[in-house]
Length: 97
Image (cartoon, rainbow, N blue to C red):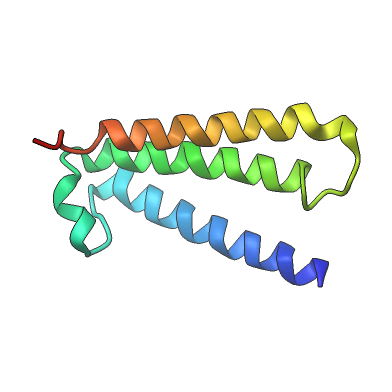
């Protein structure tokens, strides 16, 4: 079961990296209703990449690494980086009025 979780995490992180890189390099975003809200696609892509780095750090030194408490500070730092990535993505969106 653990191997399947690792594979699923790698697939999701890879998809996020591809989407983030596409936004940074070309300014392209996935089609959908949220696309109209993003006014700065490259900035949104950077936020995605930052978030992927954070959640990858959280997953692979935290829950998927094992129950060791020695890695908790690193996992929590990864979660903070993920939150910062979400903040950058939010800054790339149009202000709601």
